[in-house]
Image (cartoon, rainbow, N blue to C red; front, side):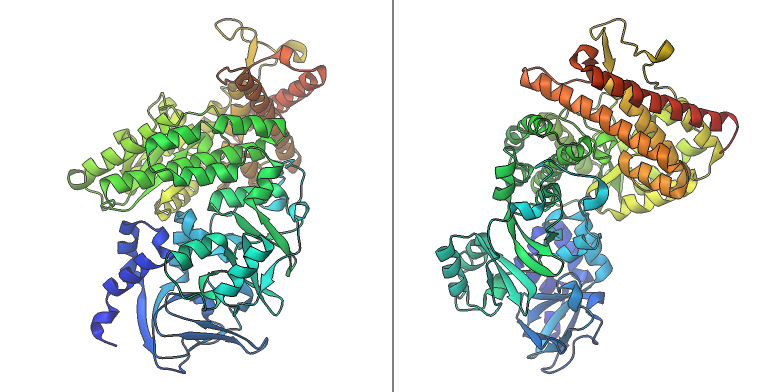
Length: 622
């Protein structure tokens, strides 16, 4: 091998042309290329010791590689452009398969930690490393036992399977695979070897990886397959399939019963169960090339919420689905901004705050966001770029219906577009000097979630903040006082008090009188216990496990949150059906006697636990 071949430029060229790595933007690829270690191996040489495939991801730049499992007598022949090892080889084989040079070869290696980080930052990339998502390392959807279910609703994944799985051996030719797909009128086939799922091939693969590339159709179909595709267990709720497809922008998913393949479901199967499909809506978002196109697509969000409400979807699941679409729109705007302005001069992470961060959005949401920049940021050199960048994204979100935050808590505001070190100073000041304005800001900026970019910038910051707040009696006492400012509207003898004056007279404010108090309580518990969860439901689960609140109280708060949030979602759906703008103000006349009774109970739960928290504060428990 010539020394020139082992330069970062060689890797960059391969990444740019690669079907997986080309999902990343040019700037990310350019920064990533030098991080790959390049090696060469003679024919017959082992590439990694047996059992070490889990430590690195290998990309074949030249030559061929054999993966062999002596226990199963299974072999896979890989060529230039193929990947193996961490994330690319099925998890069950990482400790048994051996990688050997089948010819003189040139390999580029990337460590497992970097691959995991990249998958967290880039959803499109995560799809090609599904074993990481399955292991909870690449932004997985909520677990099946988390209480999330749509009554696609109340439907299991197994119920969506329409036929026995169509399977082929990996060595089947591309021509034969295409012929079988045509004969059976299916859009995908599964590759199976000795009963084990090997890969997935779709009609899109045939178009993009064969026809468009002029690939020899006599090559094995495994050359164009997605290896170790994302799968679901048959007993999983259909909602989980819907979320995974929307999040990863995919349309086919194999279904397993344990280790046995039982079928395949598609986005079409879900769409037939649900007339407005988040999967298609998310896919439509990623297809848009202009802000105007995204704005048109975003008009489908309100009908989506109406359909979810009519299908009796839980508030938890509705919040996650609506937020998933917001995340997709935000990410696409970021892509468009970088395409227009060029690659960013330093690393950054775009961060959602408030309800988007908590995955609790409805169709009526403004935008709260910020930008955490790498500490190499220099205002004179880089300020103009990130000023234009953040303005593009925030204005684009406004065009898509996410109005500018009235309090200007957005990345386009200079104060909320700062290097990581400056953000650390902000949080230190808010915690050490919890003045009224600081407490107001903490209610927004203590609920943060990375949307796009270098997530380590936020993750490390979050850990520092939680270490600072955990057990901090002065700060927590002030947070408790702030959390008690929003009270449920219960009067004497448990009657519900209505708003007395103004345009909303005679109604109750579901958001500020019911939902916000629960969100505030969960936030205080989380900061006190150092819980990293952001979603309110998840926070209550974590703090109950940590002993910050009793399991029964946590369950009561979760149930109250679900009930109040569902009332708001259904109320907004009725408004949208009448052609009205959705709001948070509910007239009690809209409710049945049964619902009014439960509303009182939900408010009573909040009132009681606010009292408990207030008593702890007054007695100095913290």
